[in-house]
Amino acid sequence: MAASVFVVARFRAKEGQADALKQALAKLVPPTRRELGCYQYDLLESPEDAHDLCILEKWEDEKSLGQHIQGEGLQKLLGDARPFIDGTPQGNRYRLV
Image 1: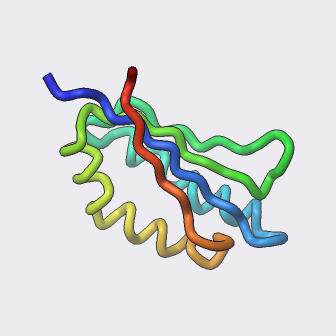
Image 2: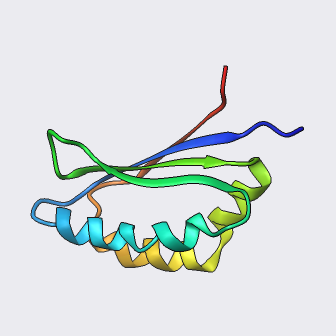
């Protein structure tokens, strides 16, 4: 049986663009939750800093995560969000210990 994959994808909004970035990233949530192999996909905001956002993900396996990453919908929506992102988004994968 394949091990679940967890992802923490962090985004930093440009100054004054936190709401615009939240709206752009929020569009990813409903369609992604319907993808095969997606167990969790939540957009989170830091309570101390509205410019600090992350998406907490849980996938069935590397294959389902890979299909998500290569999907046209994700690429388009991330492209739409790009003008509001400061720097390069960080994406880290984890497994249960």
